Length: 516
Image (cartoon, rainbow, N blue to C red):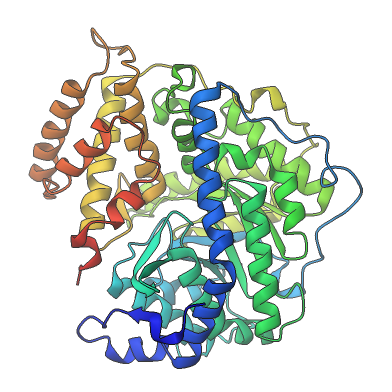
């Protein structure tokens, strides 16, 4: 068993000595060490099982199937009832990076139901950003920010990093900590009891889970935490984010494991669509067409995914929320109203499908969305067509689709190298989810040499690399020099095997770990 002396924590960046000392107290380090010691073998099993399952998908030709006969899918069990402070899930603000005090403060002073405090998709985990993020959440939990009292403010919906991320600045026994466990332990130790006392959780989003084993692990961590912090069983609540096609086939089993701690299910779009490429990377029958025109929530495979989650949620009395409206509203009134109209139209369709909530990025979008909830009601329940769950949409691959994916990928990598996990593109806040589907499609199209609809010949590395150089020049003329991102994007695309997560790839770069 590792001793406290085996915990190594990197020195703080200049100017963050006070925050570093506040986060890494002796008691917090002991909590972190004990949690890691208790669950390190289970976490390693999670990683091993992911590798084993991916190997099976690569070599067996089999496909995942929706679980239909088990103790979890039979019976009349339901998730535990929600406390009053967590029942309103209609509007969460998403992609709120905790390292940005201005953004976090504005979100916590909004009329949203909750604020997704995002250490994952919309956040770049430099050491500076991590320390600022943890400390800012601590300030919010103690009322030391300009915000309403916890009981009146939007719920702090803590989203730790996913299991694919590593915290290289915290080592135990010479091994870096999993990013997910580092975020979770520090946030729960410092803030958990305060949030519980206010009737506001602690509440979390659990990103990028892939299997029932992973849900079971999180539930065990929650139970251990509640015992250690002397909380009642079921105090910690978590939204299970269904961002992976394998998880979509195990929704009910995963929800069963978290039934004491469930805050519902969440269905997004880009990470979920990208998982088809990641999990079935060698299979040409899973090639996805241009995402802009073909991959929307109206596509049959995404409709089936949402309706499957809704069906499970209704049966097990779990709330189900939809993805984020990423639009950033401009100052121009006419253009702003046009954007609001389009967002309201899309979210109206989700309410009519039966969702209990969704996310938006811009706080200025909230009044229109609140009004929408007042006038729109769910339509009749539609049973999911599970035969469509793995039916990727038909459509074309075009030079325009290549260009858009290249631009998004370059801009994200460039932002990441600058210590930012999000950027605005075409009036939308983009994060790692958009970058993930963009660079994944580029790799897939090259790997399978798919034909271009509006040009002769297939998609090739030479063609995509030429487009990368062209996009670098185009973006530079527009005022953004992304030349630092080009070699990294080329490395991702030319890789013989698909690299599962763009953030894992980028987080290992010294320039990111040492970013000021």
